[in-house]
Image (tube, rainbow, N blue to C red; front, side, top):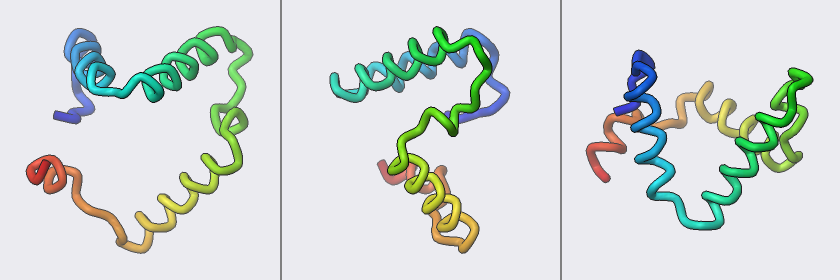
Length: 80
């Protein structure tokens, strides 16, 4: 399902499937993210545009991953 080698059409279809399941508030956030990034042509780093809590959550996730505290995505997808 989350294959890195998706071609253009497959990638768009997979994105549509994911977007189609989002609740309205998350869909609006996603839209804002996409439109703000497409309007931002100065090649600034995405990291700089994140809020402090977003950066903290990412750093916590990386720490958990590095310490082995994660679940294989295939197993999670099989369960749900």
